[in-house]
Length: 328
Ligand SMILES: [Zn+2]
Image (tube, rainbow, N blue to C red; front, side, top):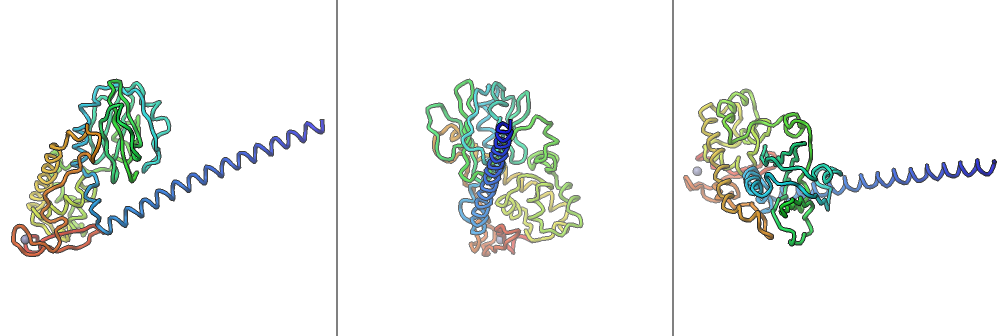
């Protein structure tokens, strides 16, 4: 009796000990992944500060739109057979049960909201964000996986949609809730290429705002998808000084700016269209297209309109290039 009692105590102590170790291990894992995330963030920030060429490759709205159009014909209407997650630690952890959730579901539609790709099924929606370096490619089963190929979505028709992301700032998430309530989507401003994005909207939202107009149009609560390069280019073609207070820009100039933003985005999407075949290519960087830039990256070079040398300022730590003669 006495012996059995101490056996129980020992067993209980052992259980507690094991539980303690498990907690400790999971805590260390959490700290480790948080630390890794932080280090990657610092690395990317330094690159941004140095205005490294790599930043030009960051997927912006046109790249995401091109990706959407590129993958849709291959996966729309197709049944998911299996999902293989090799690396779940992206910006947010990929859901543990993604394979279970998605297996046997049909992709009903592929669309885009801001820079999120939305893959809709009868049970919910998968959200994919390409982050700073992510890409989706359509490959076949015989194509070997590379170091940064983190997720494969295998379809019944033999097609594989492969998610690659060297810096791992992208995201693959799942929701069965209505999308309009999703925390990442619910506060977003209008799409820049749709009819509800107007000069009147920018004008009314900007009254009494003292922020520079460039920061204003890059704010995703105002309008989504106007990245740094596009903001620079659109402000140049609209003749608006990026540093001007948003509240001091007239309605007519906002109307001009809206059409300039739309033109610069449409041009880029059109250029992307010519690289659509890359989505079924096994190598290369799909869809990140070079653009004909008028001001971005041209500090100190002559303005294409008046030949005066272009000026650079840093706004919210982002390169801002403009012509003091053409932009007011
Ligand atoms: Zn000029």
